Amino acid sequence: MFNHILNNDFVDIVKGRRSVRHYDENFKISREELSEIISEASLAPSSANMQSWRVVVVDTPEGKEKLKPLVRFNTLQNDTSSAMLLIFGDTESYLYAEEIYNTAVEQGKMPAEVRDNQLETILSFFPTLSKEMKVEIAKIDSSLFAMQLMLVARAHGYDTNPMAGFEADQLARTFDLDEERYAPVMMISIGKAKVEGYESVRLSADKISFWR
Image (cartoon, rainbow, N blue to C red; front, side, top):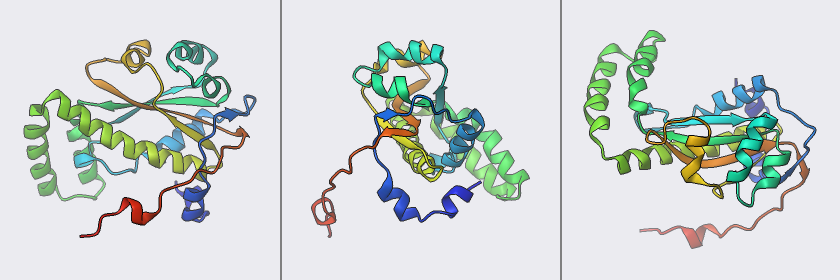
């Protein structure tokens, strides 16, 4: 699954990533490869391995037309990208806990007694959290997934752009998701760059690190 990444130098992938706004509108990534990218990105870490990220893949003209009024100043990405990936956090991801942990045991990745202890903790703790805490956890986990997705996309030879400029209060409803359950996190455009993104400047490590 990770051939694309293993055949590239990871540091070059990280340093080579750019936020691209103008894509080749005639280039289309297949749904098969987009699914592969999402699967590889899903190896990101998450709280108790609950994998709370959810992705709405908008890759049709009809879907992009529906999205267009919600993307504010990001219409160029919507119009030209191969797809727009709408990242949501599932605040009820613990509903998949038994499936996840049972599968781990079936595949020999976890002893049954560890599964039982983990499930007891998860199913007694996660449902009791406040809505705000559930949203915060889901957004943190989904952000880890989103960053990994952008790097995986780069390893596949594609460009991306993460966006927070959208009508967050309308996104779930517009794409038929439960607004109470799914928290919008960000949008990511993906495709082949038509206009290369600029290399940006980063603060040095000594300005962002506090050694104690």
